[in-house]
Image (tube, rainbow, N blue to C red):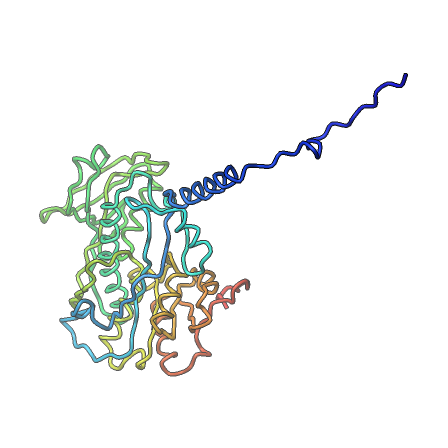
Length: 377
């Protein structure tokens, strides 16, 4: 008698035993899939969206009043536009971003998705963000005036002041708000526009910090031993610079925050204090943080700022050197002439060359994907 032949196992049932799925079950399953997808798209996610923000002409008006008002020196008529650019932010501390928004931004070309944690600690409040933005804008205004005075070779004075004393820090009980820091470890800080940087670097490199401060018309010496906070040395103070300029400059920027308008503010001040319209009547936009010596630093949201500038009709975009790669990859970059700037002097020269129609002399950003040489060309 022959042994029964083994039948290979199969993952599929015999053809005659296939069961047809209930149409009602299929419909319910499909409906639930759509419900789950829809629910996922409206879930908040820990990301922020950067979008093109409003554009403001620093030579024009804001809410019916001039953005800049200068007194104490002769001013001259201007023309054209010197636009400062902003980035609108969706999400962040106190505001939700939904998965559907993040997905749409990833597909689009004019928005950027960034992790909220990369910009703000998890416990940051919306009020703290607004306060920080306002403080940065206020500080950038003073620095913009200082940069303009440097560009015009007009003297000014600057002092480094204690703005806040951190509780339970080495400075508590030794320093007070309003103290003027005259020197640190023998290095004089008075009238040094880079005093805050010198102060920070000295604290980081020293085991003890000897300060000479001026308070109530008298000078005194204070010796502090830095603590280690988050891996860095700190004496427990926040500082601010107090400037005295030969001109008075008023800024009408209520509700606008951040430091990236510094370069355009400085250009506008130079334009109003010198004969002739720097732009030659043309429409210029740009961005960049600036220091009192006129050095331009990169900013965030360069791609969004290119989009905002082109949408407003600008024909020249001033890009900080370290933002060149992002600017040249922006969706609307081909619609506008881009000039690379490292200093306020570069920015002024670029605007004047563009006004004269000499675009071949503009310092260029490298094309997207190109490797720049030492001059970025």
